[in-house]
Image (cartoon, rainbow, N blue to C red; front, side, top):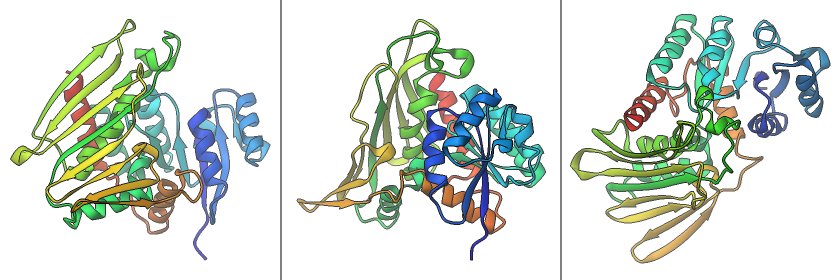
Length: 319
């Protein structure tokens, strides 16, 4: 029987609920502790997922000292990712940190150096890469089934009513479209293209509070290949990815949480379905579980270097 991996969660908002729904339904996986800024909120969240009352902490410092916790999922505002990742790593707690890994490349390097120094697992939670549909897309691209990929187009936008108190519009909390949703198509494009672009061009709209409310980017690669992306917190978009090769195209509707792949080759269309086992979060959780059981410090699918490369690309877009 596989070793049971014991999880803790720091930050108990909406995305943490989705994560907890998955982790509590997986085999050889257990949610044993949660932490928030208040004991009351922590106990309310923990009670919904069967966490013992004494394991519902009112400070982040307590959960990292808990010897029953193997790995911690960090789901706090972006501006706190670096600080809390380092806190966990220095206490020898493996970390799965929500995207974006940090606010910029410099912070990402600092976190990953801490993981290296403490010989402790760390991974950015870019769940899109681990979804079954995207594993199939990656396989088809690498096997050359649609020829040379010359263009990738992807977008992720949603409409949010302006509220300067909302974290999305608060620059102190790392708000803005690029870090919140624009990172999805950018990380996806660099993953499929196989690395860092040779040139980056962008158009960024800065709103009233100083955060980017929508951003478009063109990532250029050698031989004229490119990735076109769009992200927004002020506009609902189709949230689709199109991968265009010399022999065919792949389309993934709602790609950030996609379950369907539409293949067009030789004038014929084929639709493949990839339904989630739970809610989609289970695949990145299993990636971490497997890595910990095998004594690995990083994921091959979402490596340390790739997190740094994506942050470096985002930094160029923001300039």
